[in-house]
Length: 550
Image (cartoon, rainbow, N blue to C red):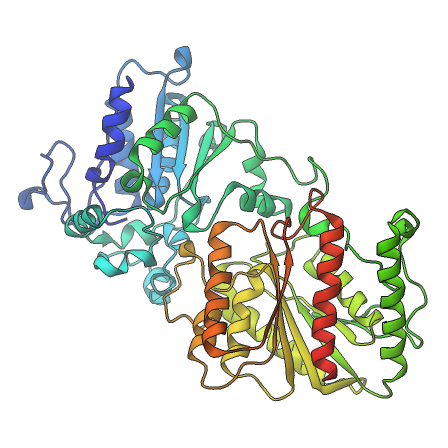
């Protein structure tokens, strides 16, 4: 987007020095040189604004056709097509038409293009995604998208690692993007599906291999192809423009990708239980589920201590047994002293989660387990399923959650003046609304391994509605008490949002209870220390219930 071949100069030099033949292609558009022009833009050679995705696919095809002596796969050498960001769309379109000549496709910090979907769907900047619907529907592709100003590049991806000088040059050479390149759907015959593919993920932009594996584990059919034998992945600890921030490292990765190296993902369940289906770490009561629309209720059983699952209790250390006995006594006391409507804890899953994922989030052990555990402690445990299927869906998901909370508070068995909301993972941004305007009945907000600010590749502006750090900092009132369950082995990008949130909480002198899982990963999993998770979940739930009882 907005760039020409100059961004590849440093990487190209290193590849050439390693013996590779390199050709960087400048795609047609106003303010850009055509193929064959000199290195600087020539006003007499500018392509028209009417250039579209088909124009760019044809240009990549022409670049392939201009290469001689490199039939795909011969002697392990062939044409490796590299696409960055938007560039993966013309690369994939050209590979589909020249599949016999392409040895590998490399996608550098790019999405997964789909047949029939225009590149606009992959643009991170959500204000651009909101181009007038009638313009796209009518097939109108005239016009251009102006390039970003110097301070606006972060809306298109993290600039981590890019020097001030390189950012100045990127801005000076940026050219408008023809709208036709974004609005015209990509058409694929399926031939490119047989071409080996490598993804290069820039982790400072928000996505790493572990996150992609978790998305695959959710069962999205569109991601199943990523587990194929010809698909590999690499990570680079940098922002969205690795050709500017670390050209030498990128060149090394491209050479390894051409040789077929890289990390391979596993199909769902092939390497054990996925993290989101890992058993809940604590014993929970056997309670009936009451399902109403997208909301599941778990009501406390009178007496509160019967029917506890936990066949592994006999194998636990005496210390864990003593903690459990004390917990049962506390639970019994809490249940016995409550007469009438009970306070409720509403658990909100993370995301984005593919539409139609099976099992659905409210049936995940971690979500249902938390709700049943809270009910075992005397509160009403509630799970909410919302429609966060894409980062653009946060407004819709927020509406789902708000409607669910209204439903919960209207139930006569619930004390509508004592409600806690608990958000997980990518559901963290939904905290922002409740921080900005907390109702009097909201006694506590909790979050487990949350994302607390939009990640760079989400394309949200700094004034986004779904920015808990900013919502907390800008609130003109004291926030509700906060409980934060934090994992010690969180990804750096998510950990940075948590640190920013705690810094804002400190400045506001907000009441925050932080519960740590020192050796825990995001979402937990089979390799994490179970005793740490047991203690942390027990402590976090108790902290929330204490605030409901206050």
